[in-house]
Image 1 (tube, rainbow, N blue to C red):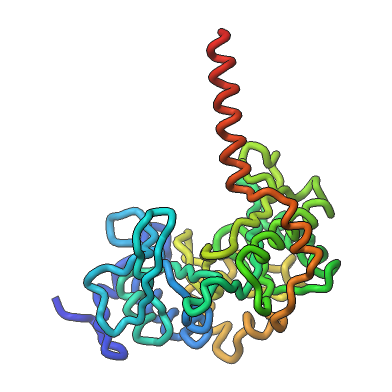
Image 2: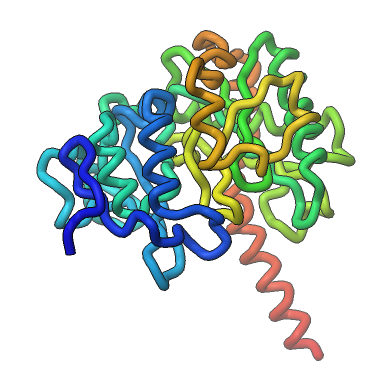
Length: 320
């Protein structure tokens, strides 16, 4: 079967098929959006190892890190050792229109670049806090928690920009000058802890879900080689929303569903709000680095606590 259309030498197929159940969009809508918004999204992807979430017809969405063998030879890539899977993974580096169109034709809906550039994997370019409201919680709780983070940053002389995650929460990005992975990870934990202390009834840093008590989760685990969905990336969610920048003063007037593949391109046609709202790169506040060194790594702490609770449950079961 031939291509429906060819753009920048990339054959595009099955453009009129629904993107996924509940998308309220076709594959053509995805391609058209990414093509129209390419000058905004490509700077967020360029030079960074990329993972994507694809949705093939009749299948569940899946994250793809390793480039498939059929990927075109012209697609830029980088091979990195993955400690978690003990193998080398070949990531794409999506830096131009042709690459983005190829991914769109592969039904890659979400774009998750690393926080470190491929050429300096030991240096983090942004500190990121992922703000996740509780299940069923209103988006307004996430916006209130984001403002706590903004205050915690201001308290140490720093500033960041905020965007909708495109799902149900928000991402706060803080651009950094030359910063190591270890220092950025610790500072992220310290920033989350400071924001939590500002209003512990609203926000929590508890990594174990059952310990959150219906509060907004300040996820401080996005550091190092972690990925975060890029600004302007679509999401595999009902209505196909887009992760979109929001001025701090407008947070109480927006919702994630306000920005979709059908309207977001027009909103960025004349300007790049993410670039406009982002402060200049700044030095990490030494107090955050110092405080972060004293805080446990959430995933490790949760793993040990999970094992402790499992032992306690077994002991109780053994006594009954």
